[in-house]
Length: 187
Image 1 (cartoon, one colour):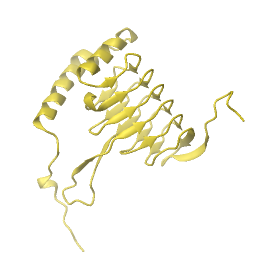
Image 2 (cartoon, one colour):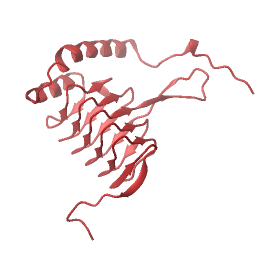
Image 3 (cartoon, rainbow, N blue to C red):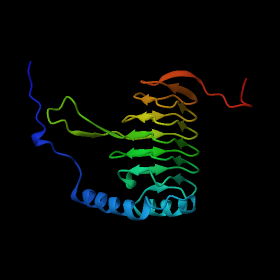
Image 4 (tube, rainbow, N blue to C red):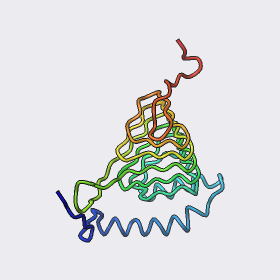
């Protein structure tokens, strides 16, 4: 069976309002967010994100080099951090809990394409990263993933399936290594 794929008639689901909002965000990001890299401007960056409807706490820390596709699709909990050069490709929603660290150069992608559709249409798949999680440097978190409370994703890992709470995973694809046990909680 031979079927032809042609993306000539590809249709995305983003409204004109969404496109204008992203254009305005891009300009504000370049002029009022990215240049303010000092820790002194931590609250300024949170303020800018709040203006663009990000659900973000004042205690959160977002480095100026972080790339956020759509702030209105970002939720960042208390005392959580988006490290240097993190990329939030959040066409779909990305929800990050409290006391969570997304380390430098990590990439979160909350969308994909329907490969069974000849038009390859976009599918939005939210990412949920719960409380007390550590995503180590240069990791990839794929569309539709949930990472459970207390989990650790090792550096350079690629996560394509859900991670159970208090688990340590690493590799490509990420594989279970052990349970995370905090000192003082051993039994």
